[in-house]
Image (cartoon, rainbow, N blue to C red; front, top):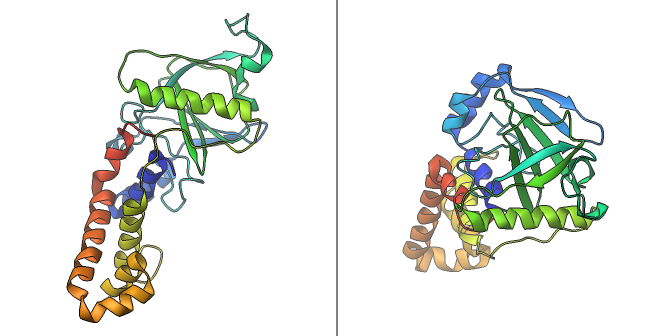
Length: 263
């Protein structure tokens, strides 16, 4: 999964965030289905308490990153890419062929749009292996019938934004085919173990488990059975470290992933 998705998997487990979401569930943005399967969310106001969690508006913590409408604050998500949205047929790139024009409604992926009270338009394009978040600070055409022009402003997080632009171009050219993960490869096993340890220990969407259950998840049943009695001190310490890492990630360390140099 991309870092933005991992970050959501951490935040949605946070009990305080879940309580905040329930308290604001009555004031969520209106959802408008668009032609072609996209959805437009219209926020009636700023969600200042959601912004404290790093979001533009509350997303449903009972949904995974593949399903939830998660919009990270662009100032926190290093890979957020600024774009200009223009009506179809009005692109300034008149010398480019039709295949070089990125049309938002033609992108073959999950498309969710958020319109904030300041007139900005935020766009989430995501799948299991990629996460593309775009934003336009100027008023955009109604719906997703728009051409997308990439804008690079400033040098901050340039590599991350270039990676996002490369993903967007790959999505445009894939025509619904498999999109490869772009960016530097990283070992996600420690983070996966940490979140699984958190889930087991705290009973997230399951009955609470024991330290022994956490150890089994990390090293497998055979090794856990073999080592738990003879060498249980080291194995218990490993399980406790995984739980502590998961707790710290859920409590706020998820934010660190948003600013990393990889997608």
